[in-house]
Picture 1 (cartoon, rainbow, N blue to C red):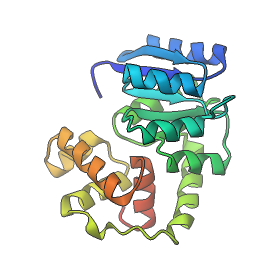
Picture 2: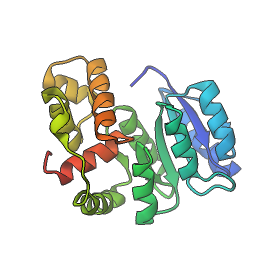
Picture 3: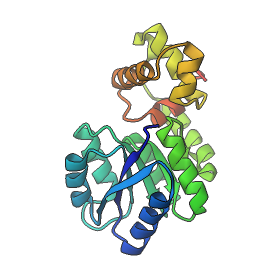
Picture 4: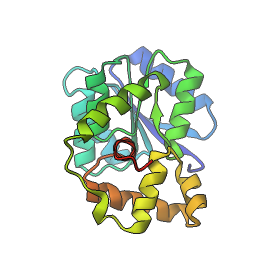
Length: 214
C-alpha cells in the first residue's frame, strides 16, 4: 500500500459522498483528490487525476456505475475500483466483478468495516462484504462449469500466483511466499489476467477456486 492512497469518490448522493470523503480524510494513509456526482464526471476525473483508488456507486442517473466501470477498464485505468452500493442483488454483484471491480461493499456496513475492506483492497486482498462472499463464489462457480478458459498457457510462476490469489493472499504475502519482489507479483498478476481475459484479480481468484486451484 502506498504511503498515501489517492482516492476518487463517485456517487450521485451528495450527503453520502461527503460522508465517505470525511471517513477517508480522517483515516491515515488516504487523500481524497476528487469527487464526482455522475459517471461521466467520474470518468473525466479518473483520466485527469490518475487516482490509486476509485469508490464507485452502482445506481446513478445517466451513466450507471456498471457502465462507468466498464468504460474505465476499457480505457486501461488501472486504479483499484470498488463498488460501494446498497444493492445486494446477486446479478449486480456478479456483473460488477465480471466488469473488473476489485471489490463490492454494501453501504449499510459499519464505517469501520468499510474502511477495513478498502484497506484490504489496497493491499491486494478481496474487498467484498462478508455476507456476499459465499453468494459470489456460488454464482461464479456455476458459471465456471461452462467457462472455456484454460490455465495451461500460464507459466509455472503465474500458476503459483493464481493459486495464491485463490487462497485470498495479499501481494505482500504472495511475495513473501514465493520469495520475489512485490512489484514482480503485480507484473505477474497483470499478465495472468490478460492471458485468462479477466478484468480483476477478484474474478480470477473466484474462478481459480472453482477450478480447484485454491
